[in-house]
Length: 494
Image 1 (tube, rainbow, N blue to C red):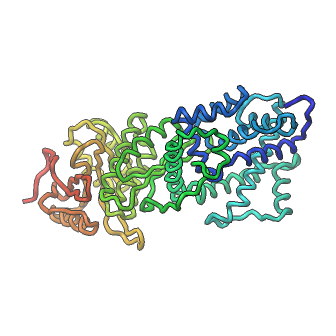
Image 2: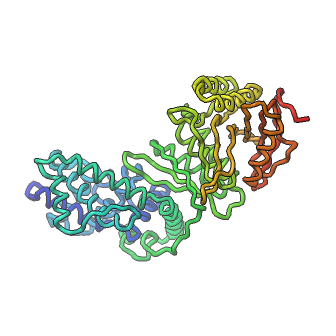
Image 3: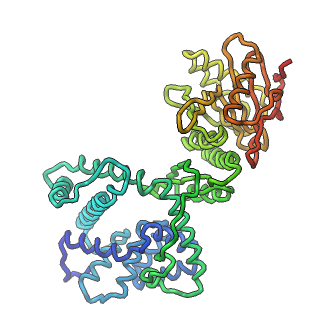
């Protein structure tokens, strides 16, 4: 900013607000995400964006924003490009360019104290504006009054030098989180936007030969980022797996792998502090939902194993996602076996998984039924000598009707082997009393029947008063219990 140009902090905030608004695409957030992905993947569009800015300092800031895939800053990049065509002799234009450059993280002549004040005021006013306009559109019981007196009162709470603003800031932060979950980051909205974003990218790639400059892409109503797209129906069955990844690179790799699974829809959105969240859903018409969900679980389990986080919360979410489709798309609840809420764990290798389960059995002394169920699983694992990855669920798995909530079946534990080609799931039925083996066998048959899982009575293995059954997850919904992997201690009922 020139030395002879003098603006107050509020003037700078007003200029910055006006400048960022002129850079919005007509399709706003979805178009910004499409543009930043396209510039990162397409050399032609990346160069077009880079050379649309004349000043070398601004080019560097624009390039860094694209490299970071910062779609929230794309309106600022567009505004810089449009201001290149304005009269630079006007102090307001020069000030707007420097303020936008400052917002992108560039070094300017503005003192640090002034810079902090401008950005703080701008962000708080922007957040209040979003909350005031968007809270009425969300299914939340909270509103911010739109009259000038109420807004002035809130601003005084935030900006008064004689007031502790922490309470007001916490309230705004909580409302933003509420709005994120109910509107911006709602699975239906995110996945619909993902479908539109991919349409935009395909459309822009098909028009790359037309050599449009970036200014026309911003201003033209017929550009790929501004044209109207047909309404998109929600493509999934409404059940979504949400995975939050602090590392953007890891999230992108996982997203690419999940996208290759047939019948899967995956969408990503960024939250504060660079955290990326993936939403995974299955197509309504896909015939092999259990197999697709199993492949998602396999990816998550193997990624958790690579990072030495085999107790990752992602594992529990992915396991419940798989069990939902395995157990006839019922609502699934896994009862924790520890006071800390642990429901399952994953371990690679025969020795490690038996050792881990023994540790957990030691904590089950107060619950003899639960301890017996875990000991049955342990006896099975002691005879399973394969050193592959195993997800151990030594807890009760309750399957209920998703509408009425009525319990359909309860299994006394389960094992899942993500990397095996068949017999990947083992169901357990334990009887901690002197029942005949037929009681456990009949209980398993009754539960399979309630969940419409095909079962043959002769394939269920009994040992003393307990029973288990192997299940093979197939590509289509024709999976069936099998006994391909017997242990030496197994025996069929006579």
